[in-house]
Every structure is written in structure tokens, then in C-alpha cells.
Image (cartoon, rainbow, N blue to C red):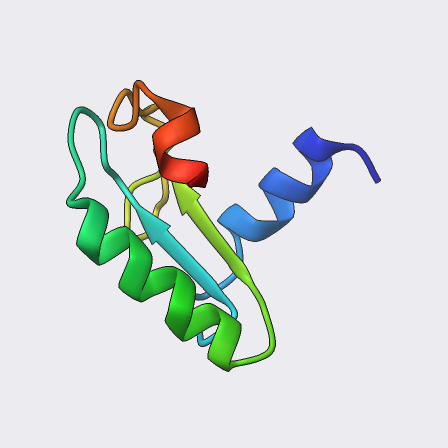
Length: 74
């Protein structure tokens, strides 16, 4: 399955302990990002998708919240 096909599937799925959407168009608190990642890890892994509206119908809005991806990875 391609990445685009996966994204389309996720967009139709409800949020749960393994799938979370955050709009994060221009900013997103890095501490919140860390807490979401830890919560997903505690559930055995999952997906946090930034740049997509939280509420259905979901729309891809893009994100510029983390310009320095190296800092986020660290």
C-alpha cells in the first residue's frame, strides 16, 4: 500500500489510542508533542499525524509547526 493510500485510509478512521490527528498548521507545543509520542509508545506504538484537522470530515491542511526537524527528532 502506498503512503497516499495509507493516509486516505487513516483519514477515514476514528481517532483512538493508536491514531491521533493534530492540525498544527503553524505551531504546536513541543512538550505536547512529546506527551503524545509517549502516550502512543505506552500503547505499543501508533500514528500521530500532523497537518490534518482533528474533527471529521478531516482535511489535510499541512503543517509548518516544526521547521527544525532535527530538533524534533532529538
